[in-house]
Image (cartoon, rainbow, N blue to C red; front, top):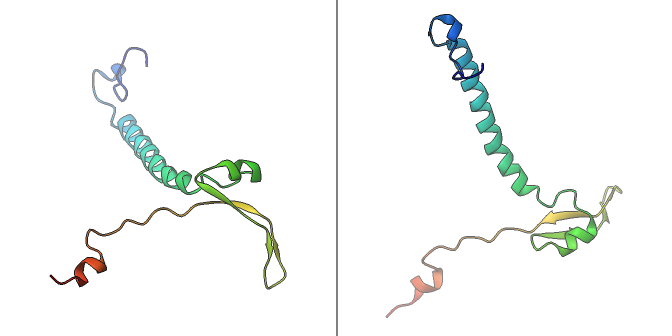
Length: 100
């Protein structure tokens, strides 16, 4: 639709095309939802699939050596994201145990 607004149908005597508007809202909602959920996944999978050399030079990943499970299955080495830092509370146990 050149020169027109999305969802506006000039051939419909200036009436707003509700069907097109609903389709656009649905598409936009799906895109927003996908971007929110994929952002979370990509943060977790930053190291997934990295080769050993790349993983070793990364500051946010570490290489896990391959091993054999107790059931005999061999697990190949892989790159893993380092655990995040834990948030400490304002008051620690040592502060509350002090008596003045």
